[in-house]
Amino acid sequence: MAPSEMTALALNQRSWLEILFNAIQGKGISHGVSVKKVQRLSIRPSELLVKVYSVACNPTDVAHIDIVGPAHSIVSCDYSRVVEEVRAAATELWKVGDRIAGVVHGGLFPDKGAFAEYLKVPSDLAWRPPPSMSHQNASTYGISAVTAMQALYTKLDVPWPGSNNSTPTNSTILVYAGSTTASLFAIQLSKLSGYTVVTNCSPHNFDLVKSYGADAVYDYHSISALEDIKKDYPNLKRAFDGISLKESTRFCFSAVEKSGGKVVVLLDTVKAGRKPGVEIIYILMYTLLGEPFAFVKPIGPSFKAEPADREALEKFYKNLRLKWCQEDLTVCWEH
Ligand SMILES: NC(=O)c1ccc[n+]([C@@H]2O[C@H](COP(=O)([O-])OP(=O)(O)OC[C@H]3O[C@@H](n4cnc5c(N)ncnc54)[C@H](OP(=O)(O)O)[C@@H]3O)[C@@H](O)[C@H]2O)c1
Image 1 (cartoon, rainbow, N blue to C red):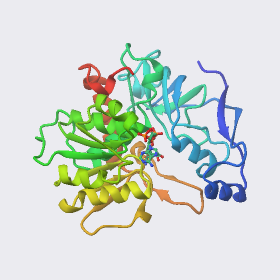
Image 2: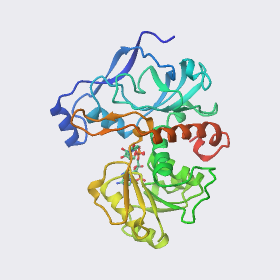
Image 3: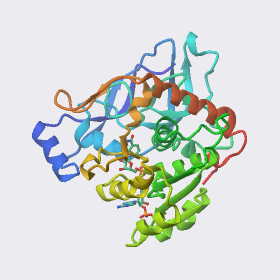
Image 4: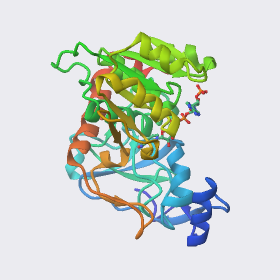
């Protein structure tokens, strides 16, 4: 049984002026977080209480600390732990002591967040890492992995690996900035679906992206990279913009423009403009968690619950646990 209090890394109170400064400067001007004693979490029948071993850090953790999250929210999203407590509705899936990993919406709520001794998670939105996988590695199958999954299977019409949908004839995908963590998962998952992956990154990462399955890699610093890709792959219809800066989104637009394709972006790069016939789709992985949320209340944007996204996350973690890891496919390599 977990104690009545636990230690967690939680957001400090910040003034509106401070938040504004942080947003303009692109970095925090003061200590946004402190180690605090917070109340023990109570779980609903379908939830699990898990105990921390490992966490992973992501750019979004910093954004929540500096700008987005309210005071007292527990920070960070990716975790790998063991199950500490199971309630009735979850006993078919889990038992105390099972290894468990996944992602929660850290930085926005006082009772969710991975940088804590204990964490509560929905029992159907987590996965069971194989015994051979370290907790450190297991904790990296959170934000980056599920973002890649969301882009490919819910937005870019890439078939789920092993699904009966045959791979379409135009089955090449551009993964821009192949060496970001999100892109490395996009490369691996695209390969599992039978796609050809074209990517770009700095030359020091060419071998890395190839080792994850990339079929062709270009140097994004080269002034001819866009024209080279367009010449070599004139029928590109899909792009995953794994860095999502203005220039990268413009690059992706241009690469898929001829075929009237789709580009998934991970940051709101609408300022990059639009191209007639090209669809730009901004995703936020938090919609996979199936609950409504809002940033910088009450003036910021709010997001509604997306049941279809939640189903996709459940399916992803089920497949990761039951199929892809057992088959020793690349997504479960130890690195
Ligand atoms: N919407 C969402 O739900 C969501 C989820 C996850 C991530 N994101 C966003 O996606 C982006 C990637 O996140 P991540 O955690 O995967 O990144 P990461 O692992 O920290 O990415 C590091 C890599 O980015 C590459 N890079 C840096 N500047 C670049 C540029 N100007 N052009 C191309 N590549 C560049 C570098 O590659 P080289 O060394 O090869 O140059 C570097 O190795 C971040 O902006 C993050 O906020 C959004």
